[in-house]
Image (cartoon, rainbow, N blue to C red; front, side, top):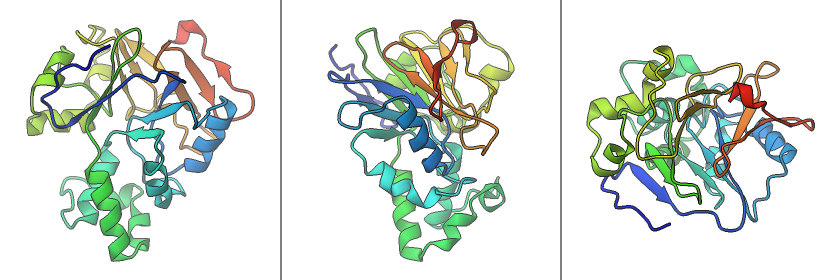
Length: 246
């Protein structure tokens, strides 16, 4: 499928995977060991497969310092979540004034040298707010919290206003309103941010943060972006999520 014209600098367009599978995963929150366990359980192959994070790579979990190692992997793609946003703002000397990131799991940043803080800040600041992935069945979009538009074409063609960016990072409007109207001109849109017991779908929008970062309480959900079939992990006994829950 040919690339679409994209004029939004905050939207990363990714070509189709012609040799393997593409998975989206919910918020990681510094729980990279648990994430790796989940990837092992679904037979993830770094040589062929790719992993797309819907943001919130850091904070709360014990391995937030590993974030650069994961971002360096050629098969790992990520968008910016609200925690990533707060961390890069703090790391680059521009703390977000509305939320105290240190009170929400960001203490790990202060354990780094100033040089390492700066490096982390620069890398997280470069993350896009959205990804559009080509698949044989049509494009799939990823945004951390919520899509500010009912038409994905607006994501492609418009530079995001500050209020749109806030919506991408913080909003829970669609989920809280149980808004089932599909987003037009996109096969599916995938979100994290709102932590749920199981993946939920509203129209063509999927909420996949199932608390894999919550030790002993949640699990990671891996959504195959080609088939839109979800698999529950981590652990050796992974299973396809029953269709009635999708």
